[in-house]
Length: 72
Image 1 (cartoon, rainbow, N blue to C red):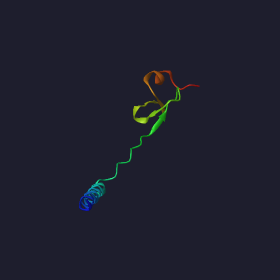
Image 2 (image 1 turned 45 degrees about the horizontal axis):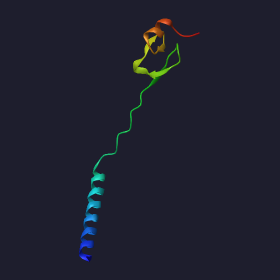
Image 3 (image 1 turned 135 degrees about the horizontal axis):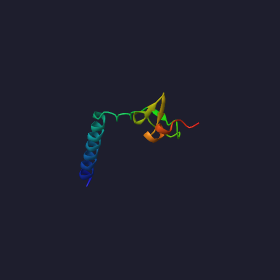
Image 4 (image 1 turned 60 degrees about the vertical axis):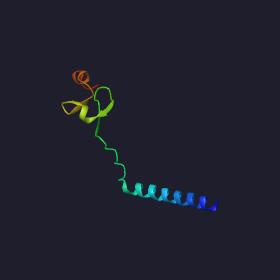
């Protein structure tokens, strides 16, 4: 019985060592990228700058708001 418990203990230690060595080999997860945001001059909604429609130095969330212009 003691030999069996010793065998199980040795297997558990080997398993834990293998798992620990596999974790060290992996690179850390990449940080999420951030994107510049803009605010619609008509409705005030924030959205990614890459999706903006610009006119006269102002950013708009859609073509309709660009056509309507800035809200007074």
